[in-house]
Image (cartoon, rainbow, N blue to C red; front, side, top):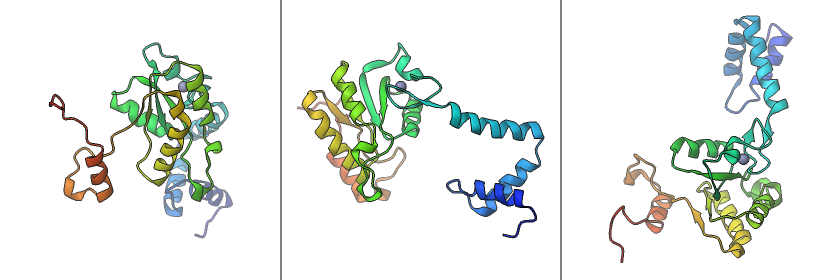
Length: 205
Ligand SMILES: [Zn+2]
């Protein structure tokens, strides 16, 4: 791309560093911002600067928070004895959106991935073990992605946590809601059969 302005080029280069944003999209976004009022653009820029400068990670669950301890960990309505272990903040948001979980979280900050050089010590695993060792916990739910990294992490966490003799569960991995069986890949379908659960109200001997 040939730019008529160095400032324009710099801005486009910054935007195109974002995931999924190519140079054309970056140019469109920059020109859009340029067409806005000064005040609006300043607000946009300041929001990003404040985000990075002021954001905190909860000192209990490591979720992104405005305070030292997040609103979920401080809420009196949440069951502190049920901990749901997730990869990152997006998973917390996804589970919160279901309105089905009333416990608390532990955000690992990633998954174990030897291929990418991510080992257990790069994640908040020691602090999870510490948490389980020092507070009463009734159940640990491991809600991790159904892929190689998720399985490796699951295996490692189980090894670290099993001596506490606390029930450890994983989320059922199966067919996506609205998904049709014939379009599910065989791994998903296979897991769905292995991890089958009793149908509500049915009699299981
Ligand atoms: Zn928290």
